[in-house]
Length: 166
Image (cartoon, rainbow, N blue to C red; front, side, top):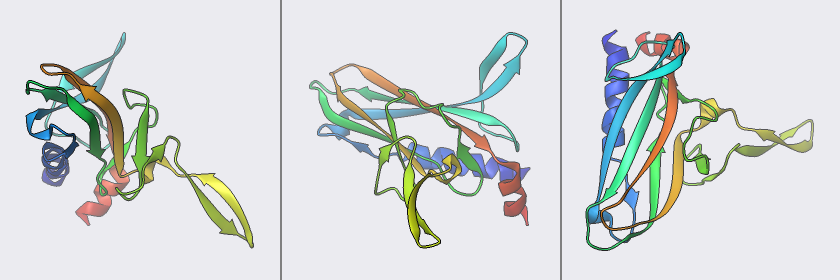
């Protein structure tokens, strides 16, 4: 169980160090909140959390607040999806205009695709969301005193956790 908590803690630490690409980045503060997605009789609810168990779905909400006196221009918000436990839940990103990357360097709109060669023929296939390692949003300009929030859900994969324990 300690390793499960450690996986979530490491991820939270990574999120706390998220880079904010902006012309006024020193004035943009980043606040992370993690919520366990809990099923109820009427749907789902979010419960603040700092730990997870295999099979749990966690929603990460990251708020970018411009504390400066001028607009923060061309803000890019990047959320890591670390290997070894957490996997992006398809179609859970908000705003929906999100890009993803498997390497942190090349981003594209969802769903990601790649060209593969099989039997001497090239074809395009969809990259499984379990291979996504980064999500990125182009937030544009954030006016002075304003905020913008992005969110995404991640699932703690029991198979990966079991491999981590070995």
